[in-house]
Length: 276
Length: 296
Ligand SMILES: Nc1ncnc2c1ncn2[C@@H]1O[C@H](COP(=O)(O)OP(=O)(O)OP(=O)(O)O)[C@@H](O)[C@H]1O
Ligand SMILES: [Mg+2]
View 1 (cartoon, chains in turn orange, brown):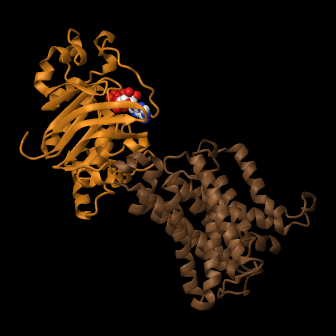
View 2 (view 1 turned 30 degrees about the vertical axis):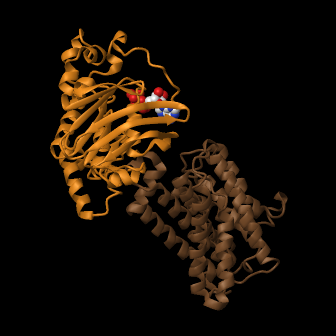
View 3 (view 1 turned 45 degrees about the horizontal axis):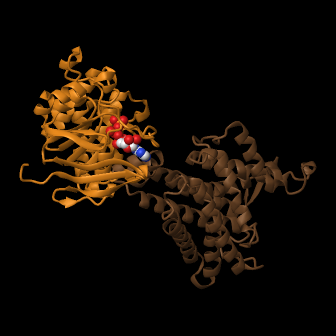
């Protein structure tokens, strides 16, 4: 790990009431890195991000053991405190404020920032990354296309000047072209100095971006290592990259749903999902 | 015709006051999804403070104290009760607010007893003649103040950081939290603002031609509930429209009571609720609302 402490998750266990969603999870994101977390539906990927951003309580869940720390000190589980420390999450499913305009959504993203100069700077950066957001400031976010909403969702998170960006399935439901664009933007954001923890089902895309990757299975880390090694490992190729099908070489756009059934991980104990 | 115009002017003025109350109600609902039944007692608390303090402090200071006091009571209810019960269902919380309302109202009406308290306002019983119509000065002031407050409120809601935080929270609380919005503060501020608006409304519900603040003031405040509900519980525009509809209906029904005698006496008091029921039959979420009360 490069000397500076980034995000360190140690021995994390999370429960939703009696339901255990994570156990003994250890994930490290060194400063400046892109780290990917892969896993099937229900593996606990979103739960991991919620534990970092402090939003488990919105799902009646909580950390039952382990710690999450950033920059060497613990995150105390309050979302506002995490944002103030520079840890910002882009939620699964985009979740733009549909009734508000594009500009208002961006403004909402900066609500945790006091310095007006910084907000203006962040807006310029977001507009440069996503020109479409600059072109349509007054459009209602609910009327944007899925890809545009994803850009807005990422742009909104960037308004808080994150040093650690948590992305939950940013390419979910996007056409390959748009997914590739989002991937390119994530790389650009990282090159501008933001560390990224990327949760994806699109393993090919995620392994292409990340330096390290973790595979979650039923709430535990089943595999981890340098992304290139994982991409080459038989297990990952078989389960997530659809080896033996023409999908293999496609850089982006492989959805777990698209993969033939026999390539999905061993039957996962399915638990009721109370909130979407 | 003159009667009609006078009734209409009075109705609009009272309606604007109802809109102030309904606006607070809507703000709380938007920020916390709680249907707040303590509103009538918040209003009574504000009015009571003005009535008790004006002999010592003078009207304007007493009014400021009443507004601050009602805001504080609202904030305390949020902080001590609503926040602690956060995980509970919103339906249960609504019932909790009914309990708090009963407690507060009982204590305040015990304090008021059988008195009718004057609020010491400077307009007294003066009337203005505007062309053919004669209207109480208090009504004109009420309309002006309510319109100004509502405008200021809507501008703040649209353009300030507070307003953006409010709307973001109303739309998706979890995502708002991810933006660094402190939901506790949003909720606290909603309750405080609602309390302050209720105190202003208390003033205008108790001045001329009403004799003063007494135990029946809560009944007047109750009319803001149908106003908020028929407009749409989660719509600020709805609160305005609802307030005006209720105010005007009530004024016209009371004014033409003799012609409407077949409906029974006191139809003016029942009118707001009748209108509410009629509108909910056709639009279950209210005129401008998006969330049905039943789904809360
Ligand atoms: N609010 C909740 N209450 C109870 N169980 C929950 C809740 N949210 C998630 N779970 C359970 O926790 C486990 C992990 O869910 P999580 O949403 O983290 O998975 P995920 O890897 O993000 O899946 P997906 O790819 O479908 O988004 C699942 O078994 C899920 O059913
Ligand atoms: Mg998920």
